[in-house]
Length: 243
Length: 243
DNA sequence: GGTGTGCTTCCACGAGGCGGAAGCGGCCTT
DNA sequence: AAGGCCGCTTCCGCCTCGTGGAAGCACACC
Image 1 (cartoon, chains in turn green, cyan, brown, purple):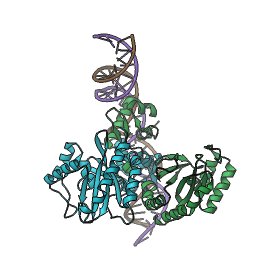
Image 2 (cartoon, rainbow over the protein chains, first blue to last red):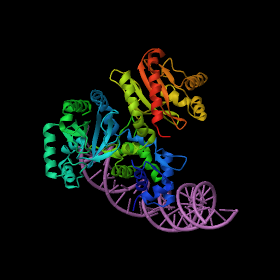
Image 3 (cartoon, each protein chain N blue to C red):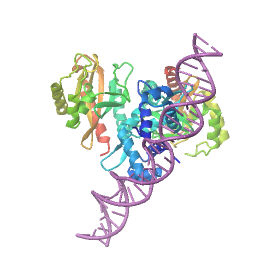
Image 4 (spheres, rainbow over the protein chains, first blue to last red):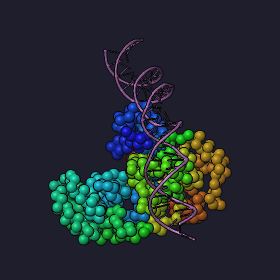
């Protein structure tokens, strides 16, 4: 039995990247609530500013939620510190530059810059992705508690391309190499034409984020010129974070 | 009498830019709730991911709220479309480049790029500011419904510098000129050393955002070279927005 | 040992959350 | 024009569950 507050939060959960706009009936169905209950909860969230209703009765996430979310230290807080280093990396490379954090068993992308000619990537700011096979995900997983590593490697590992590593034993060796080298290279693990290098961002002895550059290429060599830049930028961010 | 949901939302409201981290007792005091009630609500929000509790019992906004906020079309949705144009403007100018929307009688800053040597500005991503005297605020107010304009001009207008225009009649003339010229110039209205030019971003016949460049200077002349670039970038964003 | 502060848990009570029913409006089909 | 369907809004009696005072724990300080 859900609490009243639990229902309210479930209404918020109904909005996703795939369904950013929902009507009253769609919310009621998605959350499994009677219409009057959904109606009341939507009215309360809209009055608060967390949702906005358009002229055709569609609800979308409102600025109040974004504003609150902007207070999250692991999102915009981290981003504000990282921004100058990401901008430098972006100007030097004109490729995809991404900043991500780990949330449970997934990567959450906090920031991304991409030039128009940069290779297309599947990730979006605010979006989630599997830890392996992304570069940032490999870094975040390599430095996660062993319980997280075990759980991720025990779960289903999805093959995105013919190159995607899905054998747990092989992935463990990859993670060990990531820790040894201080960076991860993801060679056509997510799409057939993208190679990335990612480096860890440290804070108070733990890895709190990962920074990466993603370029077009058909081997790890494509990203080799960027390795030192990414590592230097990640170290710069680490130094700039409060202890 | 507040609803249960109202109390939950009030707990979220307790977190601000000035107080991004709060203990249980601080939340209870801020919201006016007994400790067990605040405790229960904080537990519910933390379980959901909207808040995170640190080892010393401090609560901060969690990634779930940021992730939901990222779905707001008027925040990151707008930003994703605007980003390439802002990056171009940033690379050409290496000054402060800002994107803002109007929320009620205030400006809310959705995105900002700033080079290290750029003039210091008082605004922050996720932060709010008065409509006048900022450049983006003048644009947003000039194109707001007349009821909003009347309300803002009837209210207290704060003087930030000796140049700040606070006479309502004079401000109406400024707003008329903004509409005529298609851009606003804010000359040392917020700080003594910053001048900005802002242009409107249109969508379906209304102004939904404003884009600006802020430079160091002691007269409007400082920003004149940037006017056409800002207007062109704003038009580019407008064309890229869905109808 | 005593005091003060912050936090956690319990639980009797009644405030208010709940959702079925009824009704309204708009759109579509016949 | 009439009827049916769908989405939405409002009402209100019922009873679930949200509430907060009390009690207790942990820790720090004197």
